[in-house]
Image (cartoon, rainbow, N blue to C red; front, side, top):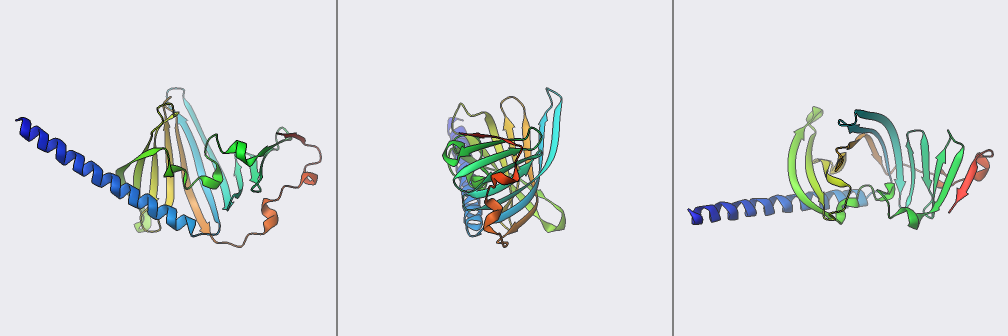
Length: 212
């Protein structure tokens, strides 16, 4: 009986390792594909749900990334990074917060590293496969933080297995909050003028500007 149980455990371990390798290989392919683009422009939907607190929030956003520069628009707020400083523009309060890019790297996901954040600090597991319309198939990879103090219990990264593009990112928090980001449109290597990422203070004459 003990030998039989040992064999089952060893078989289970072998299957788990195989799954981890498949997940690693797919994530490597995603990284290589995205790294080959000069820039990326996406439109996305953002949804936050906490069933315990009866909270549900839905928003639409857009993101343009080129190197270390990006332009993010979400929830009425624009975040502009020129590669040196991050400018958070809040029209409702007529406020602008300007921070050096280094201080912004340590908290949360920086949009410029949105598609490569998973390279460090996570364990990978092969998860479910989801067929969509028009022949698209999404393979999910489960990412569990190695840091025991991480706020996220785990993340699910949905990948289009044909294009090797990220389709969906689901973050499940320890407090029961579930945040979902779904890519609605994906473009790459489109012509981008340098001034798109340039902050012009003269465009905001009545705004209060706070610099760090």
